[in-house]
Image (cartoon, rainbow, N blue to C red; front, side, top):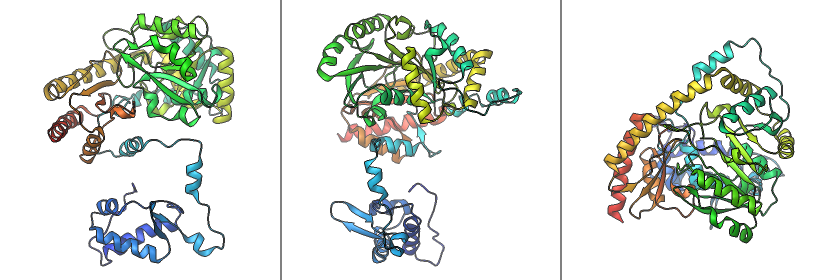
Length: 482
């Protein structure tokens, strides 16, 4: 119910009848198919800014038409529409199809976050992407404008050979030696994870991962029938000493890690911990997926080289992406790994989408080959550092008595820990009601009830300041109530 239809309060048509006609259209046009649950009366009254009795009248008319029916324990459901009123054979019950699909639905809070992000008036305090004002839109136009010819056809299964050659050279600066044949272009890091889940793993396998983890906020592995098992972190990264035991106890198939500017905590895994982790996983025969989408976004000093730079046995699948630096709309990333694995994944990718966008691949190749990318990174790092310091100053001013936090050395995120026990769900709802969107800790660890992921990368600084100040006030109020 996110459309922009509004009541005409100056009309001679009664409000309840306007609402009746609006809801009826959604049903007879098929937007609300048979089996769809009608929003609760309270929610409808709030949406239309009317008394609940007005909603009761409108729903009563729909019920009299035979379009909806209240069912005990299930709420009010659509039970008929135009097709079923006119035809002897009722239309398909799309809701039953929706529920039986292979992909798990996002949790309600993730769906709420995704919906709120479409509202331009919302202050987004946790969004993990660059602000539109930081994206190089004008330079991107120039790249396409100066190009004499562009290919609009499909690229080969592994992606543009030209781009893979350039990426092969680019990752050498990170200590990774990989030929173009062991690199595959993907439509962002999430597709890389999807391809791994359907191409390399058996249903019922267990993915070991850091706790908290970004992977808990997407259901790509769960939808493929995998289980996730979290391993605690400290300030040096994932605690690797228990990995062998947990692998044996839980049928661990592989380990997923974001060692550099971890999402959501911002932690950088130390060089010693990287070596420990790699040694343990080699000893236990555990493959690693290394997600390095934030690795270029360091501030004062570069982080340690990726785990993949120390991989001498082809044990690591390495994921990189341009989504966090050039723009998420490009949908370009890459997987680096053993050639047979890359061949397998590229075959599945061709079955899925016949290759990533040739235009986006061309653009990324131009950015990397021309030197523009390094110039852009320098600008983005400087801007993110200003935003980080701005955020830390705000936290020192308004949060010093209610929370603690890390000071990240790169990336987007501050992992804010609230000192007092409050309802993180209630905090999320209260903030959202006031136009402030949060990313609560239970998105990244179901049991986490005292953290927020703050991101200084997205919201304009004036908005961000306003949102943080009000957030502090809401937390204070909830602490007083608890």
